[in-house]
Amino acid sequence: MTEEPTEDAVTAWARLIRAQRVVLGAVEAELKAAGLPPLGWYDVLLELERAGEPLRPLELEGRLLLAQHNVSRLLDRMEGAGLIARAPFAGDGRGQVISVTDAGRAMRGRMWAVYGPAIQRHLGAPLGDEAGPLAALLSRLLP
Image (cartoon, rainbow, N blue to C red; front, top):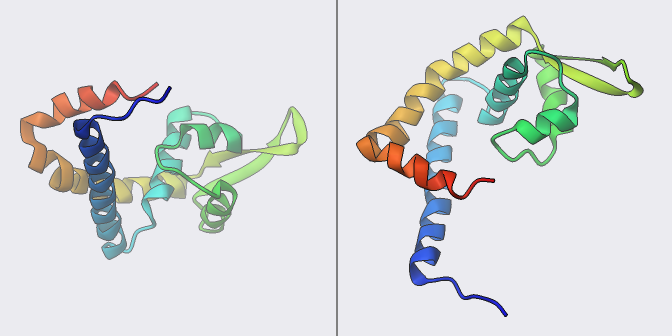
C-alpha cells in the first residue's frame, strides 16, 4: 500500500528543491566572480580541518555537505592546486589518507570571506528571524 503525499508536502518538496538550487547557484556565482574555487572545494577543506587528522577518502566523502559524484577527481584537482596532500594509509598499503595543507587553510579562509556574506545575503536576510525556525523544521528531515 502506498501513501499519496499531501498537496502541501508536494509544494514543500518543490520549494525546498528550487530554493536549494537558487541559493547554491547564487553562492557559487559569487565565489566564481571572486576568482575562487567552487563550493565543493570549501566543503572538503572545512571537513579536513574539522577532523583534525587525515581522513581516508571514504570517511571524507561521508562528511561532505554537498554531493560529490566523483570525489577522486575533485581530490586530484585540489592536490594539484596544493590545497590537500595525500599519504599512504598505515593500515593498508593500497589506501591513502588526505590532509589539508597550509595553502588549503588559507584558501578556505579566503573562500569564507565570500561564502559567509553570501549565505547571509541569499538566505539569512530574506528569512530574517524565520531562519531559526526553518532550521529546526529541516532538522526533522535529517537522520
